[in-house]
Image 1 (spheres, rainbow, N blue to C red):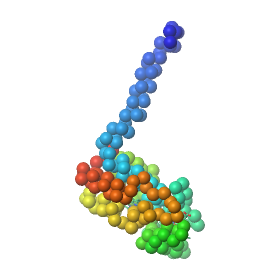
Image 2: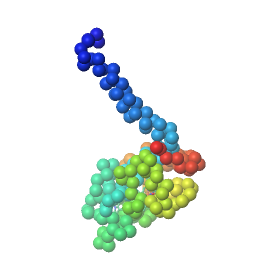
Image 3: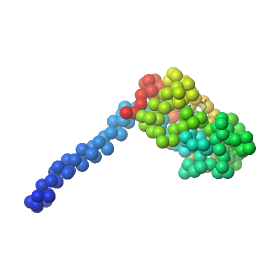
Length: 188
Ligand code: HEC
Ligand code: HEC
């Protein structure tokens, strides 16, 4: 503490530099959260494996919390419903059956709606972009699907003791409605 070596005298500068870096790291996410608190909650659901396993940017679905490549070489196919020799519907029924998850018309989200690799501002922008969200233009259109679609609702009744997203569906809808009412603000 009382040393007088030349190297010690640099300490305050080094400390100041570190403090600046740390404050950037620590403060930035907080500011983003304040800018779009509801989107933070929404993102925690969208990024959950129950959603992301279908919203892939790959030529195949993913499975389980580890988000492994789907077994049996299942492929996306032209419509997200598999290839003729192995369609999703060969195994996935309108409801869960044992280990096989199910909901009406089980298929992959189109590549344009792939969210892998996105987060924060990028994810938020994609969700609002009609070219990436299936042509949904108004806030109400953007959130409607997440309130009612059977594939979305399946994530809260996934069967086989799979984990569900971090919010309940009711909490999710509340966050969606608040976000829509605010004009769908995105984190910076
Ligand atoms: C079984 C596969 C599957 C699962 C699981 C799934 N989705 Fe989707 N999702 C789709 C398909 C297929 C579409 C395209 C249907 C459409 O546009 O009407 C879609 C479209 C969407 C869209 C509209 C497009 C967009 O990018 O804005 C949203 C939002 C969405 N899903 C949210 C979710 C959320 C949230 C979950 C989890 C709670 C989820 N999905 C789980 C298959 C799935
Ligand atoms: C040969 C049968 C079979 C085919 C065909 C098949 N699946 Fe699956 N799928 C399964 C089984 C079984 C599981 C459950 C694996 C486990 O958790 O043990 C599964 C799990 C999944 C999951 C993981 C759910 C989660 O969050 O863990 C997704 C997503 C999925 N399938 C999508 C698809 C899609 C989309 C297609 C068509 C492109 C498809 N599957 C074709 C048998 C199949």
